[in-house]
Length: 277
Ligand SMILES: C[S@@+](CC[C@H](N)C(=O)[O-])C[C@H]1O[C@@H](n2cnc3c(N)ncnc32)[C@H](O)[C@@H]1O
Image (cartoon, rainbow, N blue to C red; front, side):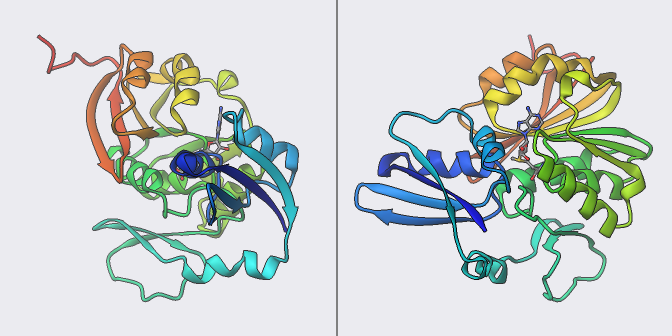
């Protein structure tokens, strides 16, 4: 298996972890090495795609690609556990044999190297927000679909159709695979179509992507929303996302939830800000 090895100064360790999660890691190995920290993860089969997903790296960060034996690289799977999103919804690894709790909707995910197993707070926050926001018959857009987990949540909640897009071909494949194994493949259209080429309107748009990308995508996120459409964003830090909200104006924030310093924010189009004035 081809893994990404990222070496950063110790004081950048948290930033580097965030960057790897946002680039699509579903499990990260971390090793202290004096004043440096060495991370290993799997992003994509192709080094070029992994490099693009990492984006430009700060000075002092070094990335390399290493071939490792698959057996140790897969040991994390033993430790992956079902994630309780809320009282009604659970995301679980496809291979988990943990007992099922009655009355819950269970979304089984095979990540295959893509982001979205439910173990990251932004996936959990986004899944909870989508669960609350979807109305029966909604047309939904999932920007940065990763494993397709949020698309499947939307369909489970009654969305009539979901357009799921991601820059990574591996994410498109993972979304198709997970949607099919969940029996909802016909309602989720996964592709690598850029957001700029997607036509709305969508009743609900969800985008769990890092802040700089959300800012860059803001005009298109607004464009594809229906007149009274709802937008869920995550991938942003609780203490540092005002610039993202500003970029999305005149959309209005209706709710913010925070877990482990990560935030998910729900916004609406065509509303008057009741907190203003
Ligand atoms: C944090 S993951 C979210 C995955 C999944 N939606 C979830 O909530 O767990 C972000 C995803 O966005 C994708 N991505 C990054 N930039 C993008 C862009 N400009 N357009 C579409 N997808 C993008 C990445 O490849 C990655 O799969």
